[in-house]
Image (tube, rainbow, N blue to C red; front, side, top):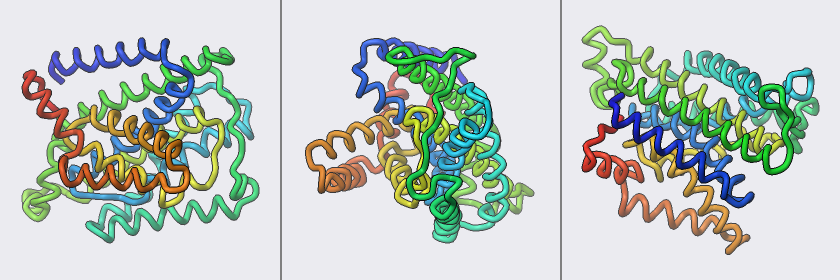
Amino acid sequence: MTWRNTLVGALAFAVVASAAVVLPAWLMSLATIALANALVVLGLIILWRAGLVPFGQALFYATGAYTVALLGRFTDLRDAVLFVIAAALLSGILAYLVGLLLARYRDIFFAMLSLAMSMILYGVLVKTETLGSTDGFHVESATFFGSALHGRTAELVLFWFVLAWCALAALVVSVYFRSVAGSLAVPVREREIRLEFLGISVNRLIHLKLIIAGTLAGIGGALAALAVEHVDPTMAYWTTSGGFVFVTILAGAGSIAAAFIGSFLFELVRSVAVDLMPGTWQIILGTVLLLTILFLPGGLGSVVTVGRRRLGIKTP
């Protein structure tokens, strides 16, 4: 990472963290969920750059969320940091196992297999009464470094907590994009056979991307569960995965920052659309997606990339 990238990231973090103090409760809640979901989008961007479009990231998202819920329900653990770490580990292990199969496939087969995996988990959650069945169940309130917080203070600390995980994820992904494995995304998408001739295992590269993306999705699900304080099977449903793909199209794969901006705009547009058109709010979202594809095919990331280039800042 260049010093300019680090400076811009630090300034953005400081501004967002400071702005949270004056944000109204509803906007802070929306921003918290948007940041949590942006981690899933960040993982999708990693796969998107390699030409892979999974429709089953809700599998890892729900895994992370249910890990937090089950730990709070059946153990004495309450620490938010331990919750998220446990969700990341479990989601990462699951991504490793699922990746053993998915890494062999491409195109529509990759997308449909990932979707099938997610729907298997959905079916298990719906049919299992211990896991709350179709209604899901409540997530116990977490503590932060041993302190139980309430009211506005709890909301503010949770927002900062989620923001800190997002900053860490952005840093790790930025380093990954500059590594050999990360920089081979375009060759994986366009020159896979040539890479194999050079002795590079494309399946291993994709497997690594799947593990990183799955872990990020698990962390996002854990943070979302802490924010909403409820989990249910729809977290693993195909429409949830579709929503993440929608945001990825809106954000584009050109910039890490676009994942967070796109996720926030998506949640904001959806919130306004539901308020204005409760029965047909999908029309507004569909229109936004259509306009993005027609007039901004590179997504918001293309705008961010152009701006960074004009400022002389390298884009990861």
